[in-house]
Amino acid sequence: MKYLLCLILLSPFLVCDPQAGVDSYQVTGLPGITNIQAQGDGSIKADLASIAPGSYSINVQACQGVWCSDPAPFDFSRPSLKAATGIKLSK
Image (cartoon, rainbow, N blue to C red; front, side):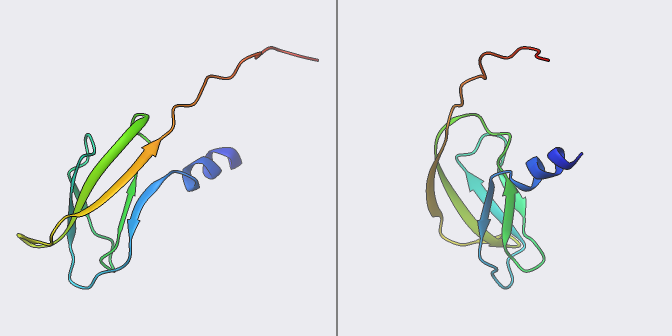
C-alpha cells in the first residue's frame, strides 16, 4: 500500500496559480481532456498520468461562466519508457 500511495502523489499534474473568480478551464490539445473544474482557489490541478507518450501543444483558457480568457499556450513531452528487461525469480 505504501508504494501505491507514492505513485499517486507523483503523478504529473497540469497546474496554475490561483485566480479569483475562475470556475473552470477550457483545454485544447489534450485527448480526452477539454473542460476542467477549477479548485476552490481558482487554480487548476489536472492529472496527466493517463496521457499517451508524445509531444503536446496545448492551450488553456480560464473561464468564469460562459466568458473565457485568451488562450495560454503550453508545450510539453511525455517520454516513452522502455520495458524492464531481465525480470526473473531469484533466491
